[in-house]
Image (cartoon, rainbow, N blue to C red; front, side, top):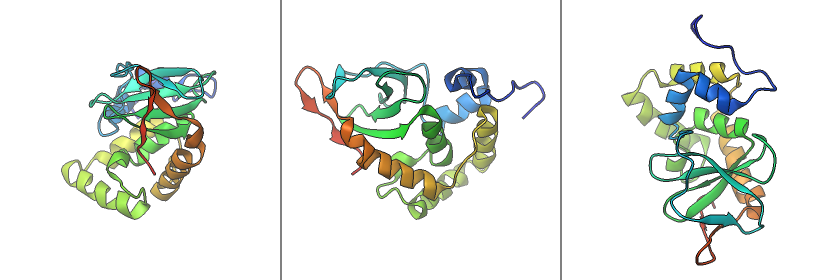
Length: 184
């Protein structure tokens, strides 16, 4: 981190504000994380089957959207919906989502969501971008996040999507059809 960079966020500050304040963190999250705060509108009208609040706060380059679920702040569960009718609860809270995007930004390419599979995909990314890990570490430091290993992040993703996520069913509002599970 350079001396001109802002300090990592305090425990009471917003991670969204920290991302906006730290260009290197925002850049890493945009690529390879495919997470951009200026894309928060979903491609179609949706709601949670439970009736809980759904708030889009970020998106990806292919029309997918990251939503906070329920009431509260950045500690709320985070649901991801792609533009093809798939959805999954990815994390409980923004810090957990950011750890996933920093440690395994290629999570969408993992079918089994195992550390071995992630390492194979990571090797392909590192061939094209050898400074990727340094960028990840700089982004994590700028956001004040400690990073767990791939196995822990992916295990938590599977558990969140398949166990906790059962209570977060996304519905295409006009037809009442539920989105399919992205992680099963």
